[in-house]
Picture (spheres, rainbow, N blue to C red):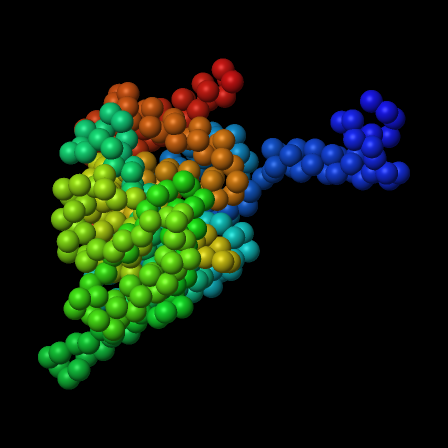
Length: 375
Ligand code: NAD
């Protein structure tokens, strides 16, 4: 090879220096990524939240990725102390760190403060709620091969919170659907489909009845679908029919995109297809930040009993690892969770076992540690 060339190609003076600088930059970048510490906001939440958050923290740390947790409280306890269930300091922490993981937070039914979960999504502009639903081998359910992704619009619809009494005996809730938010969530669904090798997006609506609001959602999805023609297939379903189809033939569907309320309801239905709320993870994603949380709520009746299943929050942690670019660690954690469930010796009550939250986490940490020492 002539001197001054790289891989046999003639080079100009100065190329060598630039190449060396680029290689050294790449080496430093890889080294930095390998040893990087990620500052992440951790919100333990209410009810079963703190136990699940602790189990998830241990498992994420056992993945080999370094975390510096900024623990922030929100929900019932803070309400009593600070007069708001969602202090500004929590929002500031998430905006600073860009990434958060949170346990569920209780919302009083009918009375009391508005949902912290909804407020968090709206205030931080976390417009996309991503909820993958996948069968876990060894977990006995009615179906073996469910592999769906729910993309729920997170900021408007009936969750905009615009409601009032009309006189003493009537109430009105206003459903907001905008073209901008509908096109944005549809684009998110199609981009997700492209990036993750998915084949089809199904828009879910009730446009036959709500011709303006759901009609606009559907029209927006069609506009975006046209831009992906030939790459990702598109179809739509009326929400009631969709529910029946999901129960009868879930394998026909791939990525679903829904307005906020239908997305909420269909998420729980789909969780039921793969083993229940204990195994359904989620992510709320926006341009400024991402908050990872399970689909389920705070299940107050199980609070403090070392009983609830941490899988959903742990799998939300897997989504977090993917989001920060730690693909290999994400895969290790996901494989470890699936392996422990498949073995069936250390699972929680809802999966047919008798292990506690902590013991389940112990089994996953032990598995990750053994992979680390044999690798
Ligand atoms: P929930 O999801 O808390 O619980 C429903 C039932 O599902 C539980 O009673 C339990 O049987 C089962 N379950 C849920 N999570 C489980 C787990 N990890 N392991 C084992 N079993 C589990 O729903 P809910 O009772 O309707 O709501 C309770 C509270 O949570 C309410 O205040 C609600 O507003 C709130 N909530 C919060 C969020 C959130 O923080 N994102 C989401 C939904 C509900």
